Image (cartoon, rainbow, N blue to C red; front, side, top):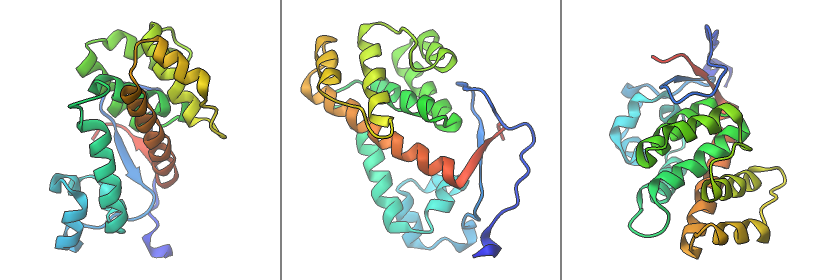
Length: 200
């Protein structure tokens, strides 16, 4: 296994949360595109992800990656009912901010800004942290996301009550839970197998 370890010396790695695009370097060797089989491409769901070192590393276990990607897509893209996309992305951003995952926070904060048109508030979350005052509805979403991301999780009836008081339906509350819980897991995975790098 030692031959798959990559020696990294990241120059000027990102150390602050940002909505700018940044890169990511794996500490283990991703598959090269020459090694990809049809099963690997199926597991990616989106073949363009073969260009990403993160997905090219995770595809070493195609069954798990395919399940992970389909779960991710359903949580964030299946917005016909339930929580608006912006607030699903807000939940992911809050979890990523708490967990210190600079790469995930950059990706999902950009989506939160894009879909909400509240770029200043999203930046405030990145700059000030999860205690930033973003208004009742967003505060309730961030607090629930943070509670779900704590170790051990601190999410409970008071968070559900705050979300309901902020106007969220049960279906929308479910979407907050799924978005935050998924990204709490995803952050820990990403933080354990690589590091953010300056933009390519």
